[in-house]
Image 1 (cartoon, rainbow, N blue to C red):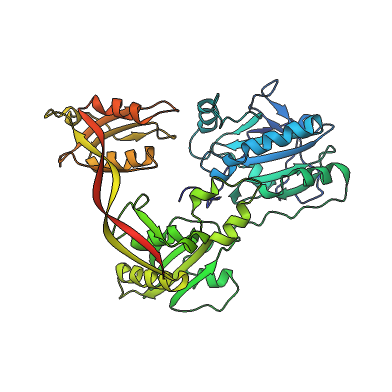
Image 2: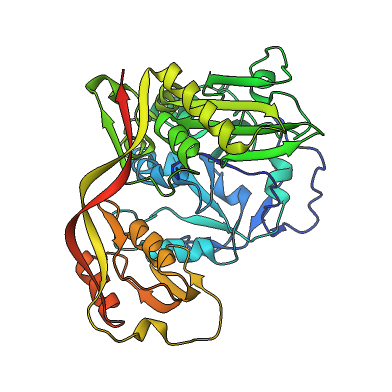
Length: 439
């Protein structure tokens, strides 16, 4: 459920400086306005390392590509942007603008770790420090990626989503001063006091209770699964822009946690509904089409006397009916890796002060005073294609440090575990799986 356009509830990001004497407008810029001569004080991979924006758009079209490290769609498009830059050469500058949204230094770390790999960001990149807000005041946005188009006269020509950045539209901007592109739609922030959020967004009648399934709603940002009590007598389940498989995972999570690798889809026609793993393979900017065809919204409002478990059972029934699916949990045999102890020692149980820590790319993790289940969760993240289960038969707390290279292998993971007299062995296990079967 990771590969989604990121929805920013609070946006307080910006650049750090402007040219001396420059008075910045308080109101957002409109299409056709002159862009103030902003000063970017850190541009990685650029000749001088910094620049006024007027130098960047001089004699060429400038496209600012707003992104941050938590936006998978932003990252997927980097190779495509690089190819477009090669095509248009000196007539266009495509300039990624990375926001340190999570922590200071996240953009630099991201670029450094991907050097020399197929995922490297080779274009010069502006770094926007955490907490600045100027860019958001000038070019209001509440979701990323966002593309800001500025012509060679410093005039704002468009603010679009990433799907507009293609060879045809760039040629239109270069060759026709009247060329227009659709403005990116801003995501709406909805209050928990609203009635049916989805029906309101879809311009239908508000309801006091019930459930609703809609197609993808582009004007609402994708969210984590949402359940809450509101008002004095109602509760809500809410999932916005989820694939069919992810909706089922949300509905079943209280019955069976961490189902990612334990879902069996039976019946050929069900493949009409792709999951996010398919979105990673999409080329030629099919993402928007994928989202419209394969993502849905689900909302249920119900009495506070009803438990969330009962509401999730109704959600399962609603999904089964809508998608023509029989869904159920069943014990099945499947390939797995078992985490086992290779000696009677407890090297993983040596007390160490401090809290657990995870690096941003998850390649370095320190688990302190955690259950084995925390290590299993992390191993399942690191090893995507096979289920990892616990066979250590250890119920105490563990203290483990694992550090991996960016091109790590299963062999390297096993080597890190063996320091603590643990190992991963191939096996076949009986485990509960979620079966999704076409009726």
